Image (cartoon, rainbow, N blue to C red; front, side, top):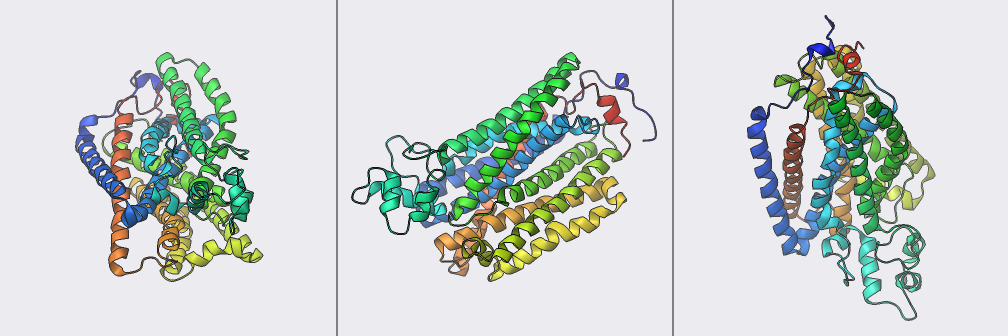
Length: 456
């Protein structure tokens, strides 16, 4: 930086979001979210084939924003556990993002709502998405002779021996016969609850420091971040196993959770750059954020481009080398027909292009360049989740084809867009609302002056 900025020259109460500059955004996002939610509710209430197809689109949109929010939790915990000083200036952005689990949980209810009391079946679309849930419902409603509970029924039914073996994990929370772990329904509540608690606790400590200016919250945040990181890792890993990998209960990969985490952390840092960059362009963060911060965030984004590539290639290589049918089916489906081109595009778009572009120092320090790279990374993260989830719609509904005809294919693509816009509208509205509640940077952190004057 060309000059030193002293904290006593900054407003003691921090800087509030100039909400008038985002009023149009808020209105548009809210209207899009409400319209999308109404259309989504209508599709689900109508039921049938359209609801079954739309459920996959809905899960795709949910996972995009869930993984980005979970990535924000990771960055908040990492900044605090590592006692990062440079990240203080931009830390409030991911802290606010972590508060968006509540609207995401409400939006997730059409798919993840627990069994109604006294009911044996989830909605048809959930049973079609997660084949094992459908099989459980069939066995529970028509148990084989001699079966005293669902697990006995799986053991006695032809073709469900794998589900019998996986029953201690793959069972619903209100069916505890033979279940050694919290069931699928309960884990939904546990994952959302713990991740929201972590984000809320870290934000509260940061806000306490804004009010008091004491150093105590810094030490407490560091202490809590250290034990919260393993909890975060468990929740992040098993959420991806439950909600994406179990779409095909016969497939498994021990690296899948890390793969989803790597993509989510990368996309989350890209979103943080986009939000900070937008605020800078609208006159915020004066004397707080400089090219040095974008350089450092760009380096983290570059690092996770490499980390994602390492994990994704390792998962593919180990499965290809072992050549076990139960494992190779995931890639066999995605390397067939049009999905092969999609898979090949991910290799270049998710790794080669951002890796080469972000190698240049100027690309990370130039605001327009690093924001363009960040937008590209977010779009590619959406492509990867689409590649993970949507082929399972073809396997489940259309016998391994992407769609039976062009009209159905176009309908499914429109469903994908509708679901994404619904989540984008609601998520964006609550993000702006959250940023407007507090100072957009931690004004009471004792490391703020060091962060403002960082040189990378």
